[in-house]
Length: 436
Image (cartoon, one colour):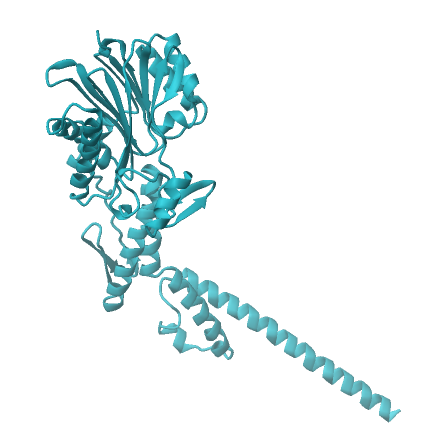
């Protein structure tokens, strides 16, 4: 009986201790909550005020620990640096939303740069922040932050001198144009490249003779420098050499060959790396002299039938490939196209300084008599011949009676069949050059 009473007393004693501990924990939690609320609502910290030191609570050392954590978090959120960062981000995003979205990357880069400059200065003097964009100070007074709005970004007008030059160049480099001259028609259209690299050259009334003329169509690559140079100088150099030779056919061909080589040599002396293919026609003394380097072609219509007067100089030709390999070069096939040194698809051209050891400028020349059944010539860049066969081209010109409409129609046919290259078509009426 005595043992049972002792056990009951121990049970009651243990229950009392557990109740007391539970009650103390509840009081501790309530005290911490009240202290936190008081700290947040009060402008001054209770730990730094005189009243907080006058009547300490028995559990205040625990409360102070949690209070300090709350205070540190609150001070971090309200710190001048965070307020400045948030204001700066709002200003930047506000500007971006009002301006061109394409400038987002530039604005973010400038914002990061300004933030880094601000961090370095705020470490030296945390009470003064300086906005580099506005050149005005931002002061930290009585725990508050006075921020001044960042001024709007200055936008440089687009009508600068450089932009005016670019606009002028774009106007000169038209996508499509037509030329109607005496006894010839020409139509040209720019492909997907940024610049039009095709060109042409015409000389009539050579040495005062209306039955002597020179025509050429040029297909440039690697820029338009070579095409422009050939258009201006090839015919002039050939005519100049004609004065140094006799009237025999072989001597005329030699003058044409020298004219091509002189043009190539003089262009290479400029140190420009672009190149150009060309097909040319010299009408003189009742004969047609056709020359070419590269893949521009000249097609003769005789009684409605197409006769090719040129052969393309491409690496796919076995004789051209062997010539290049014998000179120490190599050819490589990429996506079904053979290329010299893995880069250029033609084996002869004017220019191409970096490949001149293998890309020669010696033309192949064909000479035939100009008879009454010779109707017209079509000279065109490969932008036409890659999509239109020779007889089809002759048929189109015949139906349209050698007019400008025929040139434009051939250009349109090439484009409609997926041609993305520059294309230039010239039609020459041979009837007026035939001997009496």
